Length: 378
Image 1: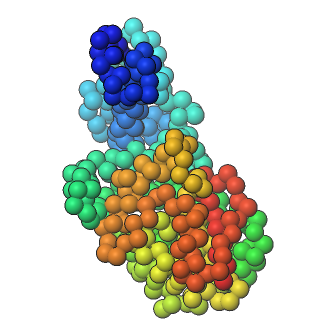
Image 2: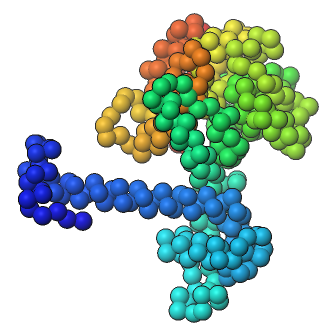
C-alpha cells in the first residue's frame, strides 16, 4: 500500500510526532498488520469449519483424500469441501498433490504436526477447540455492542454449547497434568494422597480437573461446584465414563455455597475465579469451608504483573478473551466485580485479603500453559 506525497503530508498532521515520511511508513506497517489480522481471522474461521464438520479428524484418520472422498465420508457437500481444501492448501495448513491435475483428482493431506494441534485431545498442543470459542462469539456481537453501550453483559449461557465445550476441551489436556504438578508442592500432595480426604473443586466446568485428581489418588473424594447446569451434567457423564463417579460428585451451586457441603481438607479453583461476579464472597466461602491448615489454591491466567503497552502475547490473548467472553459474562450478573480475564496478581491479593486471608504465595509451578498457581494463607 502507498499514498502520494501530498496525502502523506496531510496525514502527518494526525501524528505530529512523526515526520511525513515516517508517518507514511507507519501507516503502511499498520495497514499490513490489519491485513495479516484478516488473514489470521480467515484461518481461524476456516479451522472452525474443519473442526465442526469433522474434516480435520477425517483427514487425520484416512490420509490423502480428494474433495469427493472427504465429502462422502463426512456427509458434506463436495463443492464446499473442495473450496475448503484448496483454501487450506493455499494457507499452508494442508499439503496438496500436483496442483496441475484435474481439480476433482487432487489429493490433500493433513500433516502430522497440524493433526496433533487440531485433533489430538491428549496433546498439550491441542488447540482444535479454539476456533469454536471464537465462533461462539460471532452470533453474540450485537448483544456485546448493546452491553458496551448500555451496560449489562453476555453470559456463558448465551454463548452456548460451542463456547462451553471449547473451554472444557481446551483445558482437558492440561488438567490431566494437574496431579503431577501439584505433587511438587508437599503440603498439597500430602492432602491429596491421604485416604478419605475430601476436597472442593470450585468452578469445575466439564469436570476434568476433579476427574484427574481422583484418578491419580484412589482414596480421594472430590466435590465439584459450578453454576452452569449443562456443564455439571456433562461433568457427571465424564466422571461416569472415567469410572470415578463413586468418588467424584458435581453440584449445581455457587462457590459461596461450599459451607453446605464441607468441611473440606483442601479447596481449589482452577481457571475460573476471574469469571466469578463475586470473587471475594467465593474466596471467603473457600476459607471458611476448609479445615485449619488445609490448602486453598487458585490457578488463573499467568498475565503480567503490571499493565504494559505494548504487552506480550499472553496479555494480548487474555484481553481478547476478556473483551468478548469473560468480562461480558461477569457483568451479566448483578453486583459483579467485573474482574475480566486479565486478573493480575495484585488484584487476586486484594480479593484474598478482603476475603479474610492473610497472604498470597505464588507456587513454584512454571511452564503450565498460560496459568499461574497461588496458595492463599490464613
